[in-house]
Image 1 (tube, protein in one colour):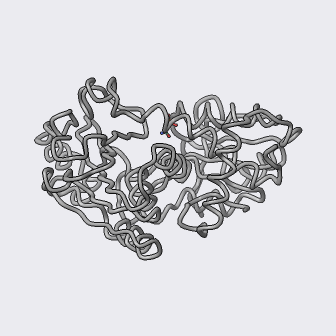
Image 2 (cartoon, protein in one colour; image 1 turned 90 degrees about the horizontal axis):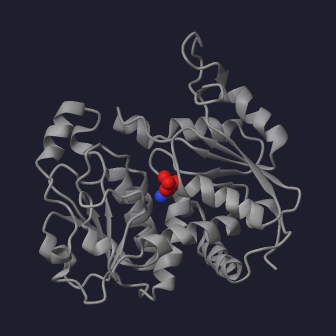
Length: 335
Ligand code: CP
């Protein structure tokens, strides 16, 4: 495996193998499997879990890592082709990425959506420019519309929780004071569909996921026997749910229209997950979120502090699955 950009690019055997390796690494976390190997991490946007778990993972495997934050202590990176670079960015990824590859055996990059034009963001221009420039294995640390590390960790969490492959998975939009990217909802809806789950996207009017995202999820479901649909009817969506995965995202219907989107979102403050939501769900239904999460905005304290919450377990699994990806990419073996 030379690229880990999207779990939909992996076949069933590759996903199963990564999850098996991740479980082995969870049981036996420390080795010299990647001794002397270096991972370069390029963060164009902030992080807690992705940054810490990749650095911890490389250390536990006997390797090391460095972090570049373009524009914040490092030269700003230009990613567009053919531009006159007389603005803020001093370095182009066409040089910057191959240079970092001189020092690293693999690279990871985080490059969020610009959030202005939906078609542009769906085309992943920044990730594509970096992938084209990278001569070494590359990991997507969250791009405009994908977060494969989160998706694979969430798949493992669902397995660890004993959620049936054909269980009911509800991805619910939730209120947030800022318009957020589509990366996690897009990755997670495809992951749950690929796992074979009965997936319902619960969202208010105007927040239907883009056609491209739903088509990818529907294709994933067609491989696995799962299903995907959208609704704005909470009681119907929650009926019999095993999992409620909350996430906010910018309204695709008014994408990039800052004032219109803010007006639409402002009327939806009631979309905050609480225990009352779980009435029609299974009694043992669990709550998932990729983190960071705003307490009592996206979800109530009573859920995060209660037995339903799997959010810390999800974050813990980031470490194990990413180590499996690194071993697969860099040729090491779990002991
Ligand atoms: N879930 C996730 O990717 O967390 P960070 O943004 O903190 O890395």
